[in-house]
Each structure stands twice: as C-alpha cells, then as structure tokens.
Image 1: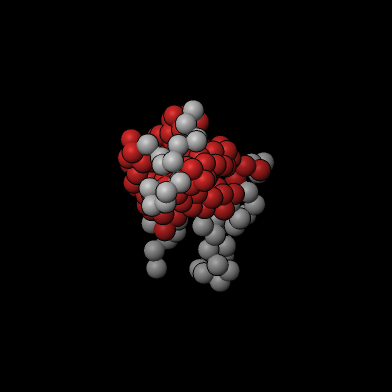
Image 2 (image 1 turned 90 degrees about the horizontal axis):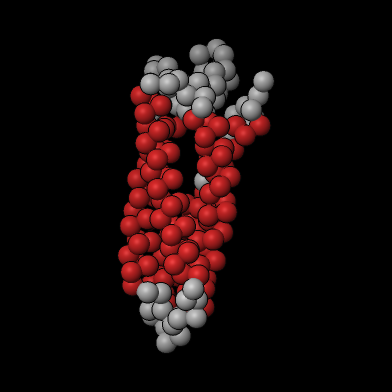
Length: 168
C-alpha cells in the first residue's frame, strides 16, 4: 500500500516542502540584521519572529514526510546513515529555532534583536546548511526518491527503498 505521506510516484512531498523553512529561517536572520540598521527595528524584530514561527509550523509537515521517506530506506545502508544524520541535524536545527522563538516571544517590542539571539540563529542557519547538504547527498548521490526517466535503461525505476541509481 502506498504511504500518502511519501507523495505519489515521482512526486515526493518532503522535497517539495523543505523549500519553505530553508528559505524562511535564513530570511529571519536577515531581518535580525536589518533591525540593527534602522533607528526603529521593531518591525524587523517582529518580522523575524513571524518568519521563524511560520517555518516551525511548516517544519512539522517537513519532518513527518521526511520520516516517512526515511522509513523506506534500507536499514544500515550508506544512504540510511546519511539520512539518519540529516534527520538528526535538521531536528537539532528546528530545536534551536524553537528555542529562539520562545526566547523572542517575550521581547517583541525591542528596537533590535538581542545579539545573543542573532548568534543563536546564525549557528542554527549554519547547521541548516549542513542538513541541506546532507539532503542533497541523499538525492543526488544515493538517488533517494528519484525516478529514472522513461527510456533510461528501458524501464522506469523508483529509488527510495535503498541504494542509488545504477551507474552507466
């Protein structure tokens, strides 16, 4: 039976959803920096908070669909180890942004984001970049959730249950 959390054949949900938090988290950091460049950065402080909260909400769907994809990878394989590391890094990233949102919530009327939160978010964005690189490795090196084009080897193959696409 097909798992609806994994999406349809050739149309996985997880890669479609990841773009939102991957864009929103760094944009919140940009808003933090912009709060220092104006005399009243309060709109940027509030904007950064809104971006983080929105990214956290979408991250729940990203995590659920990512775990659904993870469960389809052959246990103990190289792709599984990369996927487990990717999952761990991305959960840590979301945890850091959750902590940031909780700490920000009490002081949304400040004229600039507290520097400690800017540092926390900068570290979280760096961790996010590591997680994204691992996700790219899963797709482009290990062929996870990739469907070969018709005529490539005479048949269509869908990877996602371990291993990468066959090498020519």
